[in-house]
Image 1 (cartoon, rainbow, N blue to C red):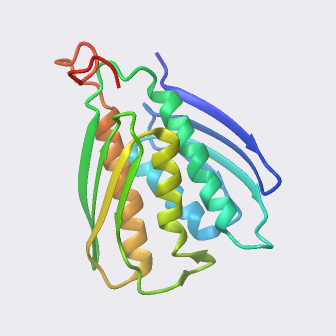
Image 2 (cartoon, rainbow, N blue to C red):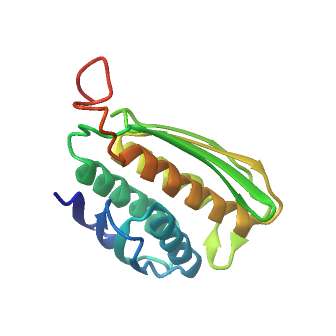
Amino acid sequence: MSRSATINRTTKETDISMKIELDGTGKSEIDTGIGFFNHMLEGFAKHGFFDLAVNIKGDLEVDGHHTVEDAGIVLGTAIRDAVGDKKGIRRYGYFILPMDDALALCAVDLCGRPYLQFDCEFPSRMTGDFDTDLVKEFFYAVSYSAAMNIHIKMLSGENSHHMIEAVFKAFAKALDMAVAYDERISDVLSTKGSL
């Protein structure tokens, strides 16, 4: 059974279409209008083995905020829908990812409760055409739309590009672990009986 979701969301600020396949091979087609953000989402898909298609038309004449935040809302919604009832999945995932000078930690829990702990400070305000303040906004939106705990911590780093890329890839690896099936889990991994 395919674990996929297609989400379309249109507001006065953004028009987004997105499709994710959790059990993919890492192929992607990304067009957000922001080059660096495209690169981050391509890395997320590749390293999480998710097939991801994203097309966004946003009000970039204002800035990138609405585009990036709304992408997080839609990605979180797509993840939540694709995961489904969560029966048989590991629920938890974590990864520590090195990228040159950067070392990023990400841990996730698909618990049905949103929470973001984000402990990162980037030395540069901009990376290409991307405002580094928007990294936190993106993951906050993902957390709340997917109803998952996300903890991200930058353990070390000097280059903002490397640091942000390490965060996106660590998140991909952690999420891939969390959505993976475990044959020992017959229902949901919770004493409550539901997530």
